[in-house]
Length: 125
Length: 472
Ligand code: FES
Ligand SMILES: [Fe+2]
Image (cartoon, rainbow over all chains, first blue to last red):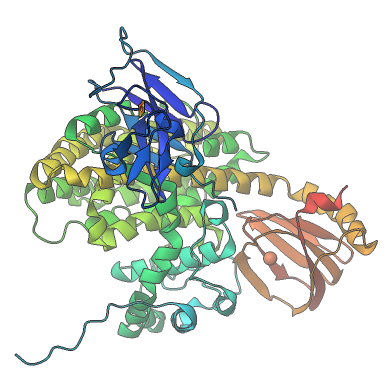
């Protein structure tokens, strides 16, 4: 399983492994690594809103809701300071929308804006 | 059934906590010393109780403030509390020190320490809760991938602390300061680990014990790792009595050592300890290889490095043992639910190494820069005198041999001598003599102390915050 480290915010806050993009999100003060694509039609889940109780992410495209607990429970990761290390599952379970087919496990980094509701609050001294 | 009174969990905070800390630290064995070093007395530790009424241990600092004075005070307190579980005798025997011995191991001292320990631990290690956070569903397979991906301390690449020694203006002094940082840990080596030997928990217990058998030199005192380390110290002119160099321990050195006591003392953190143990045992091989090389480069052939070369041999097994015989069977027995704590222990230990590297390197620069910082007194004092900078000032008058035991500050300060003579201490074998009209810039978080060499010394401390703002 590929192990990737990337930044929780700013430049290179998104890692693309085998065609699937992952970002670090924070809901109700607790962070996790999630697939940045909506399971519906691949919409930008990194721009999702969060329901008032924090239990669901709402995709900006067709407002489909994804349970936060489900996202939280998927990708094993550990954040240390402003970097997170994640172990990416070999077979990205694509229910519904299938990520673009890729050959090999090429990894790249890029920036994806996050909606304010899933952005990690920056702790300043 | 008779009515059971409601259970109230123990908690201590606010004024009650402060009072309890003061009650603990005012034990006569913890008062200020009138010398920079302790003399073969493992019970004496300077806790500076006179400052404690001004400190707030309720507000847990974040990583950016972890080297401030309250944290140093907390680490000194915790080391002292943890070590009441360890047996220490003066090298020259107990005679004449019986009272200190009893004061250190007395039920009163132990009970007072235990009472404040949870709050101090929260203060000292609370920043790790923010710093390291696990999430997602960790499985045995994902843990294996993660462990395989870890770079164990960069192989041959020097750590910032090692670079600081080799790049220092006085590499021998820097290397001695470095070795002194380890004495709190290495002389009582594996004591925190032994906390996890007690009890009854299956085959892992015996595997854990085997690691300790190696550390303890198979019961042959000459091969006990602490004996090897004593030889290293002696070979470079350092003494080996416990906590002789107490006042020279950096905040982060105590933090690193206390971390293992913290995990070992509180068995709810057992699996974090397993993670941290795995990482230490796996990374120590490279560390010791580099340490051996570094000490030879600095001291030449006269330095005894067997402590480090022995670890190169034995820890190759320990890394594998920790993974195959401790980590894997524990997951087998207790399920994948323990994995996040194991991962957390690994990452926390790496954070602490990082903090420690930064702290030590900064201290070496601080020691090297003393002549420069003495010269900087001129322009900085000028800025204050001309009113270009306004800073709170404290006026002090101290008698001969008034020793300000080592400490640090939250911001930069300027020390200005009005009359008399001061010895300003900035590290082991690192000091300045300051006469009337002279002074020194004291940098934020840097360990220092002072001694008065004249009958009386009148001086001022200007809390300038950032000294560079005085140079504009
Ligand atoms: S793509 Fe997200 S709701 Fe349709
Ligand atoms: Fe000071």
